[in-house]
Amino acid sequence: MNNRVFITGGASGLGQALALHYARDGWDVCIADLNDVRGKVTSRLLKAHGGKVLYFHADVTIEADLQRIADALRVQWNGLDLLINNAGVAQLGAIDKVTLSDWEWILNINVLGVVRGCKVFTPIFKKQGHGQILNIASMACLLDVPLMASYNASKAAVVALSTTLDQELMQYGIRVSVACPSFFHSNLDESVRSTDLGTKRLMDKLSARGELGADEVAERIVKGVTSSQTYIFPHIKGECMWLAKRYLPHRWFSRIFQYYVKRMLPKPAALSQD
View 1 (tube, rainbow, N blue to C red):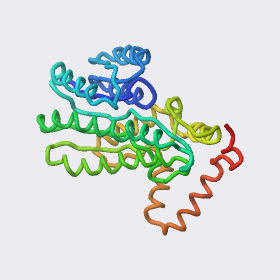
View 2 (view 1 turned 90 degrees about the horizontal axis):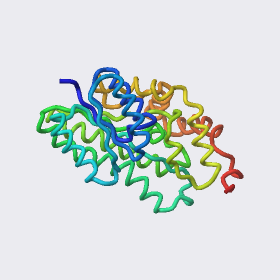
View 3 (view 1 turned 90 degrees about the vertical axis):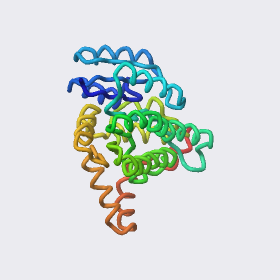
View 4 (view 1 turned 180 degrees about the vertical axis):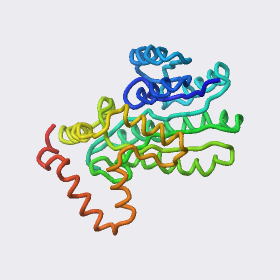
Protein backbone atom coordinates (compact mmCIF):
# COMPACT_ATOMS: atom_id res chain seq x y z
CA MET A 1 0.00 0.00 0.00
CA ASN A 2 1.30 3.46 -0.91
CA ASN A 3 1.77 6.18 1.65
CA ARG A 4 -1.16 8.60 1.79
CA VAL A 5 -1.10 12.39 2.19
CA PHE A 6 -3.81 15.05 2.44
CA ILE A 7 -3.00 18.72 1.80
CA THR A 8 -5.24 21.73 2.37
CA GLY A 9 -4.75 24.56 -0.09
CA GLY A 10 -3.15 21.99 -2.35
CA ALA A 11 -4.11 23.37 -5.76
CA SER A 12 -1.45 26.07 -6.07
CA GLY A 13 1.66 27.58 -4.52
CA LEU A 14 3.47 25.62 -1.84
CA GLY A 15 0.54 23.23 -1.43
CA GLN A 16 0.74 22.22 -5.08
CA ALA A 17 4.53 21.91 -4.92
CA LEU A 18 4.26 19.59 -1.92
CA ALA A 19 1.53 17.55 -3.62
CA LEU A 20 3.63 17.07 -6.75
CA HIS A 21 6.69 16.13 -4.73
CA TYR A 22 4.82 13.39 -2.89
CA ALA A 23 3.18 12.19 -6.11
CA ARG A 24 6.60 11.85 -7.74
CA ASP A 25 7.68 9.80 -4.75
CA GLY A 26 4.82 7.37 -5.32
CA TRP A 27 2.40 8.58 -2.65
CA ASP A 28 -1.38 8.65 -3.02
CA VAL A 29 -2.29 12.34 -2.83
CA CYS A 30 -5.50 14.02 -1.76
CA ILE A 31 -5.80 17.80 -2.04
CA ALA A 32 -8.48 20.27 -1.01
CA ASP A 33 -8.94 23.82 -2.20
CA LEU A 34 -11.52 26.56 -2.77
CA ASN A 35 -10.48 27.03 -6.40
CA ASP A 36 -11.99 24.15 -8.35
CA VAL A 37 -10.37 25.17 -11.64
CA ARG A 38 -6.92 24.97 -10.10
CA GLY A 39 -7.96 21.82 -8.30
CA LYS A 40 -8.75 20.06 -11.57
CA VAL A 41 -5.52 21.23 -13.20
CA THR A 42 -3.43 20.07 -10.25
CA SER A 43 -5.27 16.75 -10.14
CA ARG A 44 -4.31 16.08 -13.76
CA LEU A 45 -0.67 16.89 -12.98
CA LEU A 46 -0.73 14.53 -10.01
CA LYS A 47 -2.36 11.67 -11.91
CA ALA A 48 0.47 11.76 -14.45
CA HIS A 49 2.67 10.20 -11.77
CA GLY A 50 0.50 7.10 -11.48
CA GLY A 51 -0.72 7.18 -7.90
CA LYS A 52 -4.24 7.60 -6.57
CA VAL A 53 -5.46 11.20 -6.59
CA LEU A 54 -8.47 12.77 -4.90
CA TYR A 55 -9.66 16.36 -5.00
CA PHE A 56 -12.24 17.95 -2.70
CA HIS A 57 -13.69 21.43 -2.69
CA ALA A 58 -13.27 22.45 0.94
CA ASP A 59 -13.16 25.51 3.17
CA VAL A 60 -10.91 25.17 6.24
CA THR A 61 -13.22 27.52 8.15
CA ILE A 62 -15.92 24.84 7.97
CA GLU A 63 -15.20 21.80 10.15
CA ALA A 64 -17.83 19.73 8.33
CA ASP A 65 -15.87 20.08 5.07
CA LEU A 66 -12.76 18.61 6.65
CA GLN A 67 -14.75 15.91 8.45
CA ARG A 68 -16.30 14.89 5.11
CA ILE A 69 -12.79 14.41 3.67
CA ALA A 70 -11.60 12.48 6.72
CA ASP A 71 -14.59 10.15 6.45
CA ALA A 72 -13.97 9.62 2.73
CA LEU A 73 -10.29 8.84 3.25
CA ARG A 74 -11.13 6.40 6.01
CA VAL A 75 -13.39 4.52 3.60
CA GLN A 76 -11.51 4.87 0.30
CA TRP A 77 -7.91 4.72 1.52
CA ASN A 78 -8.38 3.01 4.87
CA GLY A 79 -6.71 5.94 6.64
CA LEU A 80 -3.97 8.52 6.17
CA ASP A 81 -0.25 8.79 6.84
CA LEU A 82 0.42 12.52 6.59
CA LEU A 83 -1.79 15.58 7.09
CA ILE A 84 -0.47 18.90 5.79
CA ASN A 85 -2.33 21.97 7.03
CA ASN A 86 -1.13 24.40 4.38
CA ALA A 87 -4.07 26.69 3.56
CA GLY A 88 -3.47 30.24 4.72
CA VAL A 89 -3.90 33.94 3.98
CA ALA A 90 -2.03 37.16 4.79
CA GLN A 91 -2.93 40.54 6.26
CA LEU A 92 -0.66 43.58 6.20
CA GLY A 93 -0.98 46.89 8.00
CA ALA A 94 -0.17 48.94 11.08
CA ILE A 95 -1.83 47.90 14.34
CA ASP A 96 -4.02 51.02 14.39
CA LYS A 97 -5.15 50.50 10.80
CA VAL A 98 -6.12 46.82 10.60
CA THR A 99 -9.76 46.27 11.50
CA LEU A 100 -10.91 43.70 14.03
CA SER A 101 -12.93 42.01 11.30
CA ASP A 102 -9.67 41.45 9.39
CA TRP A 103 -8.09 40.05 12.56
CA GLU A 104 -11.01 37.65 12.93
CA TRP A 105 -10.73 36.69 9.24
CA ILE A 106 -7.05 35.75 9.36
CA LEU A 107 -7.26 33.99 12.72
CA ASN A 108 -10.22 31.91 11.56
CA ILE A 109 -8.25 30.65 8.56
CA ASN A 110 -4.61 30.55 9.68
CA VAL A 111 -5.17 29.38 13.26
CA LEU A 112 -8.57 27.74 13.55
CA GLY A 113 -8.22 26.22 10.07
CA VAL A 114 -5.15 24.36 11.33
CA VAL A 115 -6.89 23.49 14.59
CA ARG A 116 -9.82 22.02 12.68
CA GLY A 117 -7.52 19.91 10.54
CA CYS A 118 -5.67 18.54 13.56
CA LYS A 119 -8.90 17.92 15.46
CA VAL A 120 -10.60 16.06 12.62
CA PHE A 121 -7.70 13.82 11.56
CA THR A 122 -6.12 13.01 14.93
CA PRO A 123 -8.72 10.28 15.69
CA ILE A 124 -7.67 8.47 12.49
CA PHE A 125 -4.01 8.61 13.48
CA LYS A 126 -4.75 7.47 17.03
CA LYS A 127 -6.74 4.49 15.79
CA GLN A 128 -3.93 3.53 13.40
CA GLY A 129 -1.26 4.02 16.03
CA HIS A 130 0.81 6.20 13.68
CA GLY A 131 0.69 9.33 11.55
CA GLN A 132 2.34 12.68 10.92
CA ILE A 133 1.05 16.23 10.91
CA LEU A 134 2.81 19.08 9.14
CA ASN A 135 1.59 22.61 9.81
CA ILE A 136 2.80 25.50 7.68
CA ALA A 137 3.77 28.61 9.65
CA SER A 138 6.24 31.32 8.63
CA MET A 139 9.65 32.71 9.52
CA ALA A 140 7.94 36.12 9.73
CA CYS A 141 6.27 35.14 13.00
CA LEU A 142 9.56 34.11 14.59
CA LEU A 143 11.35 37.30 13.55
CA ASP A 144 8.51 39.76 14.30
CA VAL A 145 8.42 41.48 10.90
CA PRO A 146 6.76 44.91 11.37
CA LEU A 147 3.40 45.81 9.79
CA MET A 148 2.37 42.16 9.89
CA ALA A 149 1.05 41.82 13.44
CA SER A 150 -2.08 39.84 12.58
CA TYR A 151 -0.24 37.51 10.20
CA ASN A 152 2.65 37.00 12.62
CA ALA A 153 0.32 36.37 15.55
CA SER A 154 -1.63 33.80 13.56
CA LYS A 155 1.49 31.95 12.46
CA ALA A 156 3.05 32.14 15.94
CA ALA A 157 -0.08 30.40 17.21
CA VAL A 158 0.49 27.66 14.61
CA VAL A 159 4.04 27.18 15.95
CA ALA A 160 2.78 26.92 19.54
CA LEU A 161 -0.02 24.56 18.54
CA SER A 162 2.38 22.34 16.61
CA THR A 163 5.01 21.99 19.34
CA THR A 164 2.30 21.40 21.94
CA LEU A 165 0.67 18.67 19.86
CA ASP A 166 4.03 17.06 19.21
CA GLN A 167 4.36 16.56 22.97
CA GLU A 168 0.72 15.57 23.38
CA LEU A 169 0.48 13.06 20.55
CA MET A 170 3.86 11.32 20.46
CA GLN A 171 2.57 8.71 22.91
CA TYR A 172 0.14 7.64 20.17
CA GLY A 173 2.87 7.29 17.55
CA ILE A 174 1.98 10.64 15.99
CA ARG A 175 4.68 13.20 15.17
CA VAL A 176 4.00 16.86 14.49
CA SER A 177 6.24 19.23 12.51
CA VAL A 178 5.96 22.93 11.78
CA ALA A 179 7.58 24.50 8.72
CA CYS A 180 8.69 28.13 8.91
CA PRO A 181 9.71 29.26 5.43
CA SER A 182 10.80 32.79 4.66
CA PHE A 183 8.93 34.58 1.90
CA PHE A 184 9.12 33.15 -1.59
CA HIS A 185 7.12 33.56 -4.79
CA SER A 186 3.76 31.84 -4.34
CA ASN A 187 0.08 32.67 -4.61
CA LEU A 188 -0.13 34.08 -1.07
CA ASP A 189 -0.28 37.61 -2.51
CA GLU A 190 -3.60 36.75 -4.17
CA SER A 191 -5.33 36.42 -0.81
CA VAL A 192 -3.52 39.21 1.02
CA ARG A 193 -5.48 42.02 2.61
CA SER A 194 -3.64 45.29 3.07
CA THR A 195 -4.51 48.63 4.63
CA ASP A 196 -2.72 50.59 1.88
CA LEU A 197 -0.57 50.34 -1.21
CA GLY A 198 2.65 50.79 0.76
CA THR A 199 2.23 47.64 2.81
CA LYS A 200 1.02 45.70 -0.25
CA ARG A 201 4.29 46.63 -1.94
CA LEU A 202 6.08 45.23 1.11
CA MET A 203 4.59 41.79 0.46
CA ASP A 204 5.52 42.00 -3.21
CA LYS A 205 9.09 42.98 -2.32
CA LEU A 206 9.48 40.23 0.27
CA SER A 207 8.22 37.61 -2.17
CA ALA A 208 10.37 38.90 -5.04
CA ARG A 209 13.50 38.75 -2.89
CA GLY A 210 12.96 35.08 -2.10
CA GLU A 211 16.05 33.00 -2.78
CA LEU A 212 14.11 29.77 -3.30
CA GLY A 213 11.18 28.78 -5.46
CA ALA A 214 8.15 26.82 -4.26
CA ASP A 215 9.59 23.52 -5.53
CA GLU A 216 12.85 24.02 -3.61
CA VAL A 217 10.99 25.03 -0.46
CA ALA A 218 8.77 21.96 -0.79
CA GLU A 219 11.76 19.67 -1.26
CA ARG A 220 13.42 20.95 1.92
CA ILE A 221 10.20 20.67 3.88
CA VAL A 222 9.68 17.08 2.74
CA LYS A 223 13.19 16.20 3.93
CA GLY A 224 12.38 17.69 7.32
CA VAL A 225 9.16 15.70 7.59
CA THR A 226 10.92 12.50 6.57
CA SER A 227 13.45 12.95 9.37
CA SER A 228 10.67 13.89 11.85
CA GLN A 229 12.08 17.35 12.57
CA THR A 230 9.84 19.39 14.82
CA TYR A 231 10.99 22.75 13.42
CA ILE A 232 11.66 22.86 9.69
CA PHE A 233 13.51 25.88 8.28
CA PRO A 234 13.80 25.75 4.48
CA HIS A 235 15.73 29.05 4.32
CA ILE A 236 19.19 29.04 5.89
CA LYS A 237 19.36 32.83 6.25
CA GLY A 238 16.03 32.85 8.07
CA GLU A 239 17.19 30.14 10.47
CA CYS A 240 20.40 32.04 11.17
CA MET A 241 18.43 35.18 11.97
CA TRP A 242 16.15 33.19 14.29
CA LEU A 243 19.16 31.75 16.11
CA ALA A 244 20.56 35.25 16.49
CA LYS A 245 17.27 36.34 18.03
CA ARG A 246 17.34 33.43 20.47
CA TYR A 247 20.89 33.82 21.67
CA LEU A 248 21.80 37.49 21.33
CA PRO A 249 20.68 40.13 23.83
CA HIS A 250 17.45 41.60 22.51
CA ARG A 251 18.84 45.10 22.01
CA TRP A 252 21.68 43.68 19.87
CA PHE A 253 19.36 41.61 17.75
CA SER A 254 16.93 44.52 17.39
CA ARG A 255 19.64 46.74 15.95
CA ILE A 256 20.62 44.09 13.43
CA PHE A 257 17.04 43.34 12.47
CA GLN A 258 15.99 46.99 12.20
CA TYR A 259 18.89 47.60 9.82
CA TYR A 260 17.72 44.66 7.74
CA VAL A 261 14.02 45.56 7.58
CA LYS A 262 14.35 49.32 7.06
CA ARG A 263 15.55 48.62 3.52
CA MET A 264 12.33 46.72 2.80
CA LEU A 265 9.68 48.68 4.68
CA PRO A 266 7.79 51.37 2.78
CA LYS A 267 8.63 54.93 3.76
CA PRO A 268 6.13 56.64 6.12
CA ALA A 269 4.82 58.84 3.28
CA ALA A 270 4.00 55.76 1.21
CA LEU A 271 1.92 54.29 4.03
CA SER A 272 -0.63 57.08 3.68
CA GLN A 273 -1.25 56.42 0.00
CA ASP A 274 -4.52 54.70 -0.93
